[in-house]
Length: 542
Image (cartoon, rainbow, N blue to C red):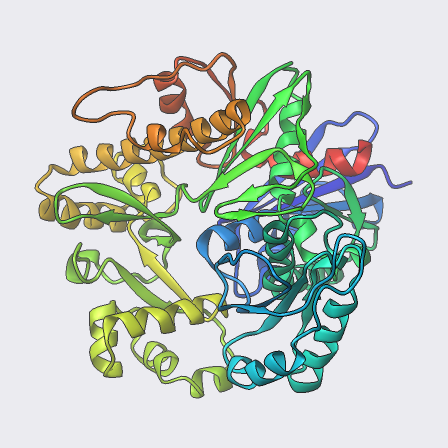
């Protein structure tokens, strides 16, 4: 008789797996493996094989629960499919971070009557120039929640000219508000390829490990859905990871607490109140996207162990929003003392392992990387005969396609150089530290401590931004939080609730954050794989 449940959480840096005894809810065993973005089934498969090998046979597993932060990570990092948005109706113009924001005549009134004829000619005239620039389309018509006719007509017109996916807002949101409805449709269009690949990777991993059990995908609202019902609703998984975070935090026994998941790519924050997670039924906000996606009340921003450390010319150290692979975690890395430079070469470009030879053959940049190995951008730009700006755009596109990885100095490397972490190649981290510290005019220890302090400050700001929005219901506090320590005054905040830490990097950064905020950081048992535990608990108990 099957008596176990497996929880899987796939993040930008690690894939975690836990085995729970259904009758007791206790963790029997757990695994943590590096995520393999170019083929997610590899990391998921290693986690599952390791879990089953040391625990129980596959036939004793009653179910598999899956959460992921891949979608939120992609939004924060600006990755995903390229989307063209068509807005139909007389509305105030707005701009979303997509390839094109196109406003056309059309739309309906609040009673569902046609407000203005759809500008089908304008749509058809726009498509030929747009088709080569986008991977999918989103369509949002004024009051389409009352009458979706114009959205449906636009969808069919687009499909006749360009057979790419088209997402209509009335199918993913039943609430008024053109900006939020457009954002929700765009996120579905943007995340669909990523989630399709992810769900396929779960199925391949199960097949390879002999698992044959129901699969539950954790949605942002903290509920589970069957895998086959999620395939065309990518954005409902937008807060999947935070939902699992909240469920794990709620099981820790606190009436009120701030649950903080510090990952490699992002920091996710949610609030436990009266023993359970808050739910935002109006729609979650992720970065600059305000949506109608029902989810746990949460906040996600780019700051984590794998954030790219940027050394400014004025001596400041900042964190970039893009995740890079830490020097310590990069195999066969050339000595950073030979290439690392704070001004021109802050990273190396690496070809993803096991790329299809035809894919490499069709791209001159990939061919060069395959032949010469990890290369800094100044050398690549010279070899490709292009500007640094155009090179960055090419690399960005190749990263979206999971064909190139960037390796650079990160907070993880600073922790290695300080001797506070030992999970990779510490020698690479120390060499990188020497180069950047010298160029910044600091000792190696002072440089690393400043990187850690900057990371703690970024996480502290994320926590305070979330709490300020929760209390004041707007973003008016943002300027204060960004400038709470300046030449004329300083502001300090004290939290009235504890911080529950989750994630591989939590123990490294949250104690310092908690001390600055006058509270305590708590690290429950199995907090390193807390999201995987939370996913399993949702599948088992709801």
